[in-house]
Structure formats: C-alpha cells, structure tokens
Image (cartoon, rainbow, N blue to C red; front, side):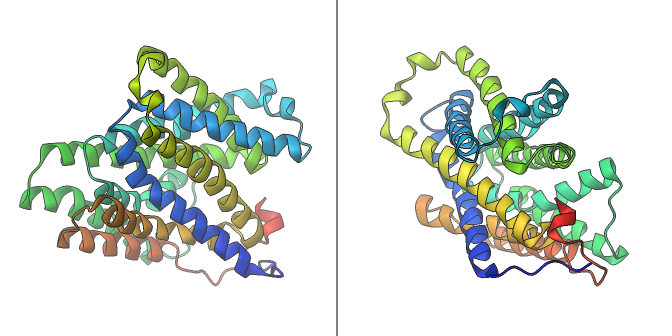
Amino acid sequence: MTEEPTKSPLKYYVMLVIAMAFWGGSWPSAKIIVGVAPPMTIGFFRFLIGSVLFLILLFTTGKDVKRIFKRSNFAILFMLGLTGIFGYGVLFLTGMRFTTAAQGAIIAGFNPATVSIIAHIAHKERLPRRWQYIGFLLAFLGVIFVVGIQSLLDFQLDYLIGNVIILGAMFTWGIYSSVGKEAMKTLSPVEMNAGGALIGTFLFGMGAITEEVWTLPALADGVFWTNVIYLGACVTFIGFLFYFIGIRELGATRAGGFINLVPVFGTIFSVLILQDVLYWTFIVGLLLVISGILLINFPSRKKIPSKTEQT
C-alpha cells in the first residue's frame, strides 16, 4: 500500500516547521538559562510545565490517565523518562554549560544518525540501499569538523568537553527513540510523552532537591522563567505534539525529514540571539551533517506503509 494522501498537507508541513524552529531555539535558550540556574532545577521546572500541559491535553480529549500507568506500562515509561527526558536532559544542559549554542546545534544534526544506529542495533532495521550508509560517515565527519578540527585550529578545552557531552546526549536520544518505538505498541504518542515526562520530572525533582532549589536566586529571575517556560511549553509540549501529529498525518519518513531543519534553525538563532561566531569549520560541519542525514533518508521506491499501518 502507498502512503495515504491528506486533504491539506500544507498545514502539517507548517506545524512541523514550527516544531523544528522551537527545537532549534532550545539551543540558545538553554545556553542562557544554564547561566542563571543549575541543570536539575532547570529540568524539573521545564518538564513539570510540559507534563502539566500533556495531562491537560489528555483530560480534555477524554483519555484515561490511569491506563497510562498500569503495571504493564510502568517499566517502559520509566525507561522513557530515564533516557529521553532525564538522561538526555542532564547531558544537554551540562554540555551547554561548556560549549556554545551554535556548536551544540550543529552536533544535534547528528541526532537522526544516532537514532538510525540504535534502531539498527536494537531492531535490526536496515537502510534500503547499502550506499546510503555513506550518510553516517558524512554526518560523523561533520561532527568531527565541529568537535575535532575546530579544536585543532582554536583549542578551547571547555568547548571540547561540552561538545563531547552533547554528542553523548544524541546517543541517549537514539536509545529513547528505540524505547519509544516499543512504547507506541500499547500507548499513543501523547500518552507516551505524558508518562515519560512525568517520570522525568520526578527524577529531575530528586536532583533539584540536592541543589536546594528553594534557595536559588533564579526563582526570582525573569530570565529564568522566560526560558524555562519556553523550554517547557514550546519545545517540550508544542514541539513534540506537532511532531507526532506530523507523523500521524504524513508518516514517519516524511515527518522525520524535517529534523534536518533543527541545526539550521539552531545556528541561525544562536547567531541572532547570542551573537555566536560561525567559523568556516562550523559551516562545513553543518553541510556535511545535513548531507549525510539527507542521504540516510533518501526516498525509497519500495512500498511505504500507510499512516494507519505505521501507528
């Protein structure tokens, strides 16, 4: 069967572009907020906001929230919260304390490749054509330009440490995506994200206690609240919601291709908001990463399952 057509795909394209723009904006936002608050506190309030919004959506759509946390679902929801929310969030925020938003955003372009690598290991997924695996090499070379070549030209230990941590976050996201694929066999995307976000909020909350969150000056700082609300409402809630609506209406392959826009938006916003400097190595790295991901996602002539079959 071929992929089912939608009546007005343009609106879903717009939703996906908005989601990618929000995700791109998370890089300069995170760089700003890690300067005023520690990672656990940021993660706690970010995902608390996202969780509340997901729960409101579930209640207004008549979903049974108790069903999400059935004993049979708890283990996989815990893995989602541990990997994609807590694990990724800690590495993302810690890395941003060292590196620049522009460098982090470009490395994030390697994200679809890490998702494919983990899927290959965990689910034995294969690319349709062998030559498409060259895309992994191109994307990795792009990361090398940002992490390695730039370090040789202008060595700054903090940037190197931060970039390696961000790269680790990308692999953590790949594990989260693989776990999420299993979770969506029994849960809808909204249920999955709501459950994972709640567990991630709890884990971040335990960490925030060690930071003595109630004593932090950031709680009275407008910069902190502006950015944490953006990360919670726009990046976590709207970004994920629009992305999964795109998957439902357009299919995973077509919607997933929009992720290539994240490093583009991320570098643009980093330059505009933070005045980050873009060296020639960053531009080469960005082009290599995007080229590699496009090659990995090169459209196949094989039959594509309909959106009904994909969900």
